[in-house]
Amino acid sequence: MTISVLVPSSLAREADKREATRKLGYVARAAAVFRVDRLTVFPDPEGRRRYGDGFVETVLRYAATPPYLRKEVWGQRDELEYAGIMPPLRVRSQTGSGSNGSGSLRQGIVTEVGADGRVRVNCGLQHPISLPVPDGIAVGRRERVTVRVSSREPVRAKLVDEPSPGFVVDRADLDAVLARADGLTVATSRHGQSLTPGRLGRLG
Image (cartoon, rainbow, N blue to C red):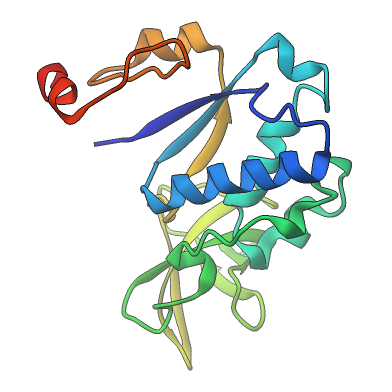
């Protein structure tokens, strides 16, 4: 089952950008704790008035990026001025815990594409590693990839066509997302009714 959470671009309307960033960090942390697969940001006109239309999406994407890739992927951006105060997500592939285990997955970024069917990938090990590209997988420079690491000393790893642990962040119109949704959809509002276990059971 895929768990998707939709949040408005007006989610962070605090007057202080520091507190707005902290709030989004808590949202990202909750998504990791409850094993959400996807955070979708939908446009809300209120979201453009404070920090610009892309603030919420950018901060959440940054939070979903493993710490060892953040500098290379994001550099310095105004939206991320207070990114350092966000709580850690502690997603296994991001913290490196379990990385000595057989077949642990890590997110990486392609830093170089060779002419011999190999690529160099930064996946948070001591140095970027050279890996062959399996048949059926096409990758380009700066592209995110998933690496299965079976050993760190010596390094044994391979590219795999699998999603990395954690969640992804995208952007879509609310109507379009709801139109293609299947399964159970729960909407929240301060004007709605409380969702009790009994009510949830009747919905299921």
